[in-house]
Image (cartoon, rainbow, N blue to C red; front, side, top):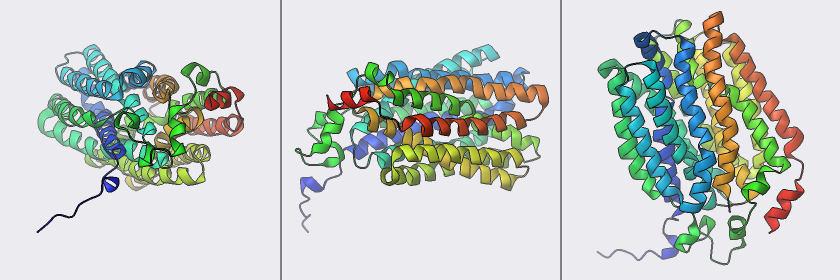
Length: 418
């Protein structure tokens, strides 16, 4: 029996291996981060702390992993994305292991906040930035596929964490998550590469003379991008949106428990967010390639506000599941479309650096939003106000995009032509 010859032109385009590596980083990194809601009650009980104080653990980590993109993005443009992604997964594993040995809440802040925050911060922006360079025509779909790792991680990891907590305690659960980060995340991040030109390839696997490569070869500098009207609009929109965007990942489980939902079912609601997020990243990422990625950005922001309105009146497990799936879908679309919009507007030359600067806006929102929601609950024993503010924030974010993002920035256009 002879094996038929397979022409080289029909081999799998290497960009999909880069997507797979980025997918694994997202799955492990954010999947572990979004287990935090399952740990909130055990941490609160063991350390005798308020819900707001425990929520601050997540906020510190979230602030760091988004803010660090300011450094990791430009470093990835210069040194390559792979070493940063590998280092990030190692840092995350060390942080989770250290958190498992914490004897005070301050030690949890330091171990989880610094270790996990810095680890995800090293890996996230370089990984997603690398994917943007490997695709042009299918950039929205490829970006959505990569960040669907966040959705599937949110689907799989919280139930796993809940099972581990019930069998080994929260300390043992953090140790297992650290091992997963080291083995799976660290191993798969070796697939990430910065640029198809390093392999003599072109974006999308196109022939060498395809003009699409020009979209990756040129582009604005970081300084030119951040001074443009479009970047400022994106930055303010992301800042406003992110005040409420991560509140469900911390407070949905305790909210459900407060409304009489069993602990096992409450944790599964995070998995429902993950399922919706995965669907949203696949579907809305592909839709954005057809209807326009900036218009899709407006759509997902309005969708997130609509979902928050459902949460405001949800009082049983089925209504909460409906909220979780709808919110997950639009949140997943937001995460998938945003990096592709940045690439569309500013080109590929410094895309990781530009995304890194943009994500500092999300860092500040993440630092304030979940912890503020926790302290609001401590004061009123209700999540009504934080949920309504989160919905309003998404509407404002969408209006900013509508009002400003459509304007042409002369500075950005000139940079793109250079």
